[in-house]
Image (cartoon, rainbow, N blue to C red):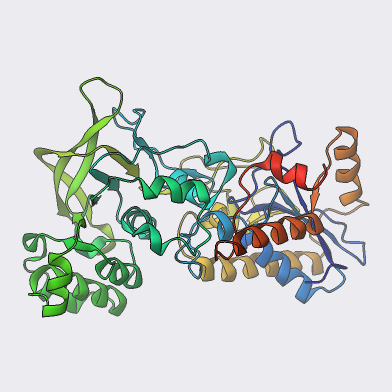
Length: 451
């Protein structure tokens, strides 16, 4: 992409009466005339899905004019806000909301979503008021995916190991004062159903100053079933088995013996209630239903056995899934599945409108999945353009948006403005040896730009 082909517009608040969801919900609206030699394409959302789609469109149709709109004053969505600061190479989130636990006590202080916690330490403006209380000894994360492991790792990593990352200054200060010594990751099903990957697991096992807690009983009989599972799952389970069942080597044993912090996996447990503290002002634990598995393969599900147990803690983070939000009444949305109904990216019954990313397929996959998916959506759009299937007639394009913003007194943040903010962040980070010190206050960003 070159500057002659595309422009980027950001705002700290989206100017529509009914906001179009952008940022980490990668959905976008395309409107252009099939009669035009220069198709005008509007992409709403500057996360990976939006940028990858724009990239494909411009590569395949060099005459296209693409405008990318974003509700945040800075671009790149989850690449900026959804990645653990010590894992800059890993990009694996991409929806704007989290799935609620829907259990009693979820509203208590000390309970929040892993998504909000990630946004807090990554500088997402809307999460900067989170102020998590880390004065407790034990934290419970409900979920056993990569996001859950990311959060556990940040909670347990020695703060000095985070100093040279782009974690926010405020978050690092809170983590320096943290009293959390133990983190439990709770899952409804068993070791064969965990959703994290082997890379993240290996890093947790080797995390300085920590030791893993795995109950060998959870792994009995598992070795015999490994022949039935795909190779990636087999390698992951074998690592879990070795960690749980085998005696560690001398070096590892010494490291674990001296560890001051610990993390553990609790399998076959389903949250039923967040237990309040005696004064009702916080969380004191999670009541869990003991489960067993029914079914085979992908149909395996957890069912309650009737037994219950309480797991004491002072912090509860839910990491049980993500979902997209509806963006506008004019755009179809399946609230149950959390997606826009579509066929290969074509939004159902709305010619000229397309979608990509998790709002297209649901909250699955990582950055590479989104890239492939976005290219396919871009290809679908180009096929429709070539076939003359898009709405005909003149369209005002970006000029109409500019006029609308001007009439409302809104001065958008341009990509050149972002480059100024980027330079400021990098300069601030240099003094402390960080790649950047993220700006987290939209008003400060606008002041720096003279808006």
